[in-house]
Image (cartoon, rainbow, N blue to C red; front, side, top):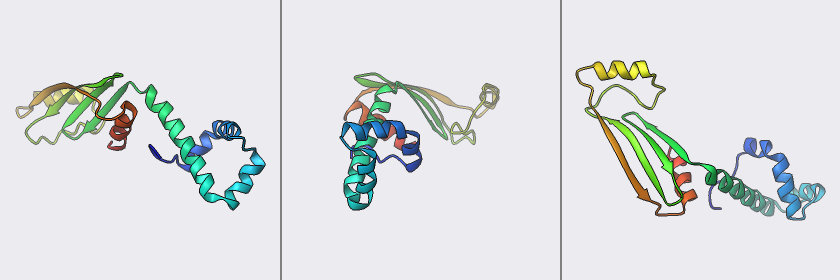
Length: 142
Protein backbone atom coordinates (compact mmCIF):
# COMPACT_ATOMS: atom_id res chain seq x y z
CA UNK A 1 0.00 0.00 0.00
CA UNK A 2 1.42 3.33 -1.05
CA UNK A 3 -0.68 5.69 1.08
CA UNK A 4 -3.37 4.49 3.48
CA UNK A 5 -6.56 2.49 3.53
CA UNK A 6 -9.69 4.59 3.16
CA UNK A 7 -11.97 4.61 6.19
CA UNK A 8 -15.38 2.94 6.04
CA UNK A 9 -16.98 6.40 5.92
CA UNK A 10 -14.78 7.42 2.98
CA UNK A 11 -15.52 4.16 1.20
CA UNK A 12 -19.26 4.66 1.74
CA UNK A 13 -19.14 8.07 0.04
CA UNK A 14 -17.24 6.51 -2.87
CA UNK A 15 -19.55 3.53 -3.30
CA UNK A 16 -20.38 4.19 -6.99
CA UNK A 17 -16.68 4.56 -7.81
CA UNK A 18 -15.86 1.40 -5.86
CA UNK A 19 -18.54 -0.53 -7.73
CA UNK A 20 -17.04 0.70 -11.00
CA UNK A 21 -13.57 -0.33 -9.78
CA UNK A 22 -14.85 -3.83 -8.96
CA UNK A 23 -16.47 -4.03 -12.39
CA UNK A 24 -13.15 -3.12 -13.99
CA UNK A 25 -11.67 -6.07 -12.08
CA UNK A 26 -14.49 -8.31 -13.44
CA UNK A 27 -16.02 -8.74 -9.98
CA UNK A 28 -19.83 -8.52 -9.96
CA UNK A 29 -21.73 -7.61 -6.78
CA UNK A 30 -22.67 -11.21 -5.96
CA UNK A 31 -19.06 -12.37 -6.24
CA UNK A 32 -17.93 -9.44 -4.06
CA UNK A 33 -20.37 -10.44 -1.29
CA UNK A 34 -19.12 -14.05 -1.40
CA UNK A 35 -15.49 -12.93 -1.53
CA UNK A 36 -15.86 -10.84 1.65
CA UNK A 37 -16.49 -13.97 3.72
CA UNK A 38 -14.60 -16.60 1.73
CA UNK A 39 -11.43 -14.60 0.95
CA UNK A 40 -11.14 -11.62 3.33
CA UNK A 41 -7.43 -11.11 2.56
CA UNK A 42 -8.22 -10.65 -1.13
CA UNK A 43 -11.02 -8.19 -0.37
CA UNK A 44 -8.66 -6.18 1.84
CA UNK A 45 -6.11 -6.13 -0.96
CA UNK A 46 -8.71 -4.82 -3.42
CA UNK A 47 -9.78 -2.11 -0.95
CA UNK A 48 -6.12 -1.11 -0.51
CA UNK A 49 -5.60 -0.89 -4.28
CA UNK A 50 -8.75 1.21 -4.64
CA UNK A 51 -7.62 3.43 -1.74
CA UNK A 52 -4.28 4.08 -3.43
CA UNK A 53 -5.98 4.93 -6.73
CA UNK A 54 -8.33 7.41 -5.05
CA UNK A 55 -5.64 9.06 -2.95
CA UNK A 56 -3.24 9.30 -5.89
CA UNK A 57 -5.93 11.08 -7.91
CA UNK A 58 -6.66 13.51 -5.06
CA UNK A 59 -2.98 14.21 -4.37
CA UNK A 60 -2.21 14.99 -8.02
CA UNK A 61 -4.83 17.77 -7.90
CA UNK A 62 -3.43 19.51 -4.82
CA UNK A 63 -1.65 22.75 -5.64
CA UNK A 64 -1.71 24.69 -2.35
CA UNK A 65 -1.29 23.64 1.27
CA UNK A 66 -1.61 25.67 4.44
CA UNK A 67 0.36 24.46 7.44
CA UNK A 68 -0.39 26.00 10.82
CA UNK A 69 1.59 25.64 14.00
CA UNK A 70 1.45 27.70 17.17
CA UNK A 71 4.30 29.98 16.12
CA UNK A 72 4.31 29.47 12.35
CA UNK A 73 1.95 29.84 9.38
CA UNK A 74 3.18 28.57 6.03
CA UNK A 75 1.62 28.48 2.59
CA UNK A 76 3.05 25.88 0.24
CA UNK A 77 2.75 25.95 -3.54
CA UNK A 78 3.21 22.42 -4.84
CA UNK A 79 4.56 22.74 -8.38
CA UNK A 80 5.44 19.71 -10.50
CA UNK A 81 9.14 19.97 -9.59
CA UNK A 82 9.35 21.57 -6.14
CA UNK A 83 7.54 23.06 -3.17
CA UNK A 84 7.69 26.82 -2.76
CA UNK A 85 7.04 28.11 0.74
CA UNK A 86 6.07 31.54 2.07
CA UNK A 87 5.13 32.20 5.64
CA UNK A 88 5.52 33.99 8.92
CA UNK A 89 7.07 32.89 12.17
CA UNK A 90 6.47 34.46 15.58
CA UNK A 91 9.61 34.80 17.62
CA UNK A 92 10.14 35.22 21.34
CA UNK A 93 7.74 32.69 22.83
CA UNK A 94 4.55 34.70 22.41
CA UNK A 95 1.18 33.43 23.61
CA UNK A 96 -0.29 34.30 20.22
CA UNK A 97 -1.35 31.06 18.51
CA UNK A 98 -1.34 30.85 14.70
CA UNK A 99 -2.69 27.30 14.73
CA UNK A 100 -6.12 28.67 15.65
CA UNK A 101 -8.28 30.73 13.35
CA UNK A 102 -6.87 34.25 13.51
CA UNK A 103 -8.73 37.27 12.18
CA UNK A 104 -6.98 40.22 10.61
CA UNK A 105 -8.03 42.36 13.59
CA UNK A 106 -6.50 39.91 16.07
CA UNK A 107 -3.26 39.82 14.10
CA UNK A 108 -3.12 43.62 13.87
CA UNK A 109 -3.69 43.86 17.65
CA UNK A 110 -0.86 41.40 18.20
CA UNK A 111 1.48 43.45 16.01
CA UNK A 112 0.78 46.51 18.19
CA UNK A 113 2.12 44.78 21.31
CA UNK A 114 5.68 45.76 22.27
CA UNK A 115 6.90 42.14 22.32
CA UNK A 116 5.54 41.27 18.87
CA UNK A 117 8.29 39.93 16.66
CA UNK A 118 7.59 38.21 13.41
CA UNK A 119 9.89 36.93 10.73
CA UNK A 120 8.95 36.43 7.12
CA UNK A 121 10.17 33.10 5.84
CA UNK A 122 10.42 31.73 2.33
CA UNK A 123 12.14 28.98 0.49
CA UNK A 124 11.88 26.29 -2.09
CA UNK A 125 12.83 22.65 -2.15
CA UNK A 126 12.90 19.99 -4.81
CA UNK A 127 11.01 16.83 -3.97
CA UNK A 128 13.18 14.13 -2.38
CA UNK A 129 10.43 11.59 -3.08
CA UNK A 130 7.60 11.56 -5.57
CA UNK A 131 5.50 14.75 -5.45
CA UNK A 132 2.35 12.96 -4.28
CA UNK A 133 4.20 11.03 -1.54
CA UNK A 134 5.68 14.28 -0.21
CA UNK A 135 2.27 15.97 -0.17
CA UNK A 136 0.75 12.94 1.56
CA UNK A 137 3.41 13.06 4.28
CA UNK A 138 2.78 16.77 4.79
CA UNK A 139 -0.94 16.15 5.13
CA UNK A 140 -0.40 13.29 7.56
CA UNK A 141 1.86 15.52 9.63
CA UNK A 142 -0.88 18.10 10.03
